[in-house]
Amino acid sequence: MNWQNVATIARKDLTVMMTRRSLRIALAVLPVGLAVLFSQIIARGSFQRDSLPQTLNAFLFFFMIYTGALPATIASYSLVGEKIERSLEPLLATPASDGEILLGKGLAALLPPVAAMWAGMLLLMGLCDAYTHATLGYLYFPNWMAAVTVLGLAPLLAIMAVGFSVLWSSRVSDVRTAQQIGTLAAIPGAGLYIGAVSGAFSLDLATLAVMCAILAAVDVALALAARAVFRREDILTRWA
Amino acid sequence: MIEIDHLTRRFGNATAVDALTLTIAEGEVFGLLGPNGAGKTTTIRMLAGLIGKTSGEARVADCRIGDPATARKLRGLVGLMPEEAGLYPDLSAARTLDFYGRLYQVPAGTRAARTERLLTMLGLWDRRDDRVRTFSKGMKQRLTIARALINDPPVLFLDEPTANLDPEGAKTVRDFLLQLRGEKRTILLNTHQLAEAERVCDRVGIMHTRLVAVGTPGGLRGAASARATSIRLAAVTDAVVAAARAVRRAEVTVSGNTLTVPVGQPERDNPELVRAVVAAGGDIQFVSGAVPSLEETYLKLLDGERLDGEKSDRNDKVAR
Figure 1 (tube, helix red, strand yellow):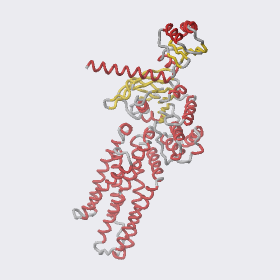
Figure 2 (cartoon, each protein chain N blue to C red):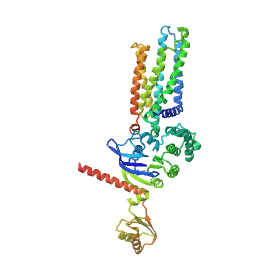
Figure 3 (tube, one colour):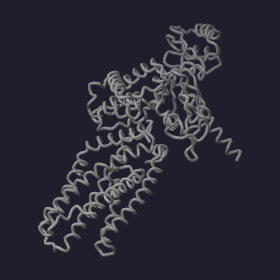
Figure 4 (cartoon, rainbow over the protein chains, first blue to last red):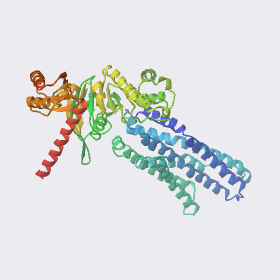
């Protein structure tokens, strides 16, 4: 693996992505907007002291599911966009290996949304602490639950969205369809949330750890599947 | 520099390239001519290490194609200009070349110098910081040539480099190809433009899934077409046509005041032909050798290939 090639491809994709206003807005506005919205609900709502921690955890989790659609959006732009522009062939003609191209593109699709997600989560946690400190008598964030959600679940969900998008990008030829299908990657996270809210299981540290383990296994499977799909030969002869 | 031995590629039941055997010497410019679907792009993709082969062998710059151990090295020694420009509309011309230069591991100083030289040669240096989306089709095509040369490759594959360009844009690209020819690179050029092949290529091959004919443009014309003599007269009369036909016992074509008569050996046949035409009352103004164009040669060879194919299909059906 030539890491210089990986970095070159990731940097180029990031440069191209950042020229798109819709993506810049999505990366900046969505996490900040959601953080402000959720914190305002906490500030203006009348929550009991006992139920407040559970609500804060749920909001953080919900925030992660919403922003989890961003990597799928960017990965769709990156791969389907190259298909539309017919720019994959000259890229594949370079000495960069299939794995280096895929990893470079994956990192470019992953890093900005994860960074935006983390920034949004930090803002949400800070604002929630400010609004709930008086009620709780202590700073609820940071805590272990939040750490696992922010540092474990969020990136794993983002990786899943990227892997899912690579698989779908080989089948579709327009960016919107790929994005719409890519957002389906948020469904497992939403399912977990609904399961927790409905009482099927509790959103505690042990549950989050199990979720992380399952997501990590899914991510590995998706990465292997994406690597199998992203082959020069197939891209040039089979991708639509 | 390029050695191809019975190279074959099938997609399912369809054969895209059928037992292609060809050698292209170092510094030679070779043109592959053929209709759409003749297998030209598939050939270039196989030789550039982009897709695999079904059978046969090929070596490009001493790298065996289809060998995973040398695949990366092969791609590093080759410059490819695909049929579709495939540029990033939101990158500038300079950033585009810098990106590809990095992937070819060209050192930073060389990359910058080569970018300046190529963009200057191709008339794009003043627009180096402009986004590609603002470029005309001709400018984009020139940038794709620069991209194919950023690694200074000894072997260059050009797939329809002047397709869809206006005459001025096509001329600019053709002039640059002539310049490249002087740099002693080995170039394989796929084209539909027969005049372009004739001007730029040392040898051409006519391809229709398999290689139908190969040679210099002039040699191919001579080999494929019977020689003919054109006689321009003050007026063409029935007596003159009959006299010409009687001498050569062949189909004589009349176009305006010009007779075209197939001849076996011009040195032997022309004096007799001229005497017969004069005896029939013809006022001869000019006598010249009728040289078939490469286009005529190409169409004739492809027609022959199609007839052979149909005959072979019929034989297969009879055999079954």
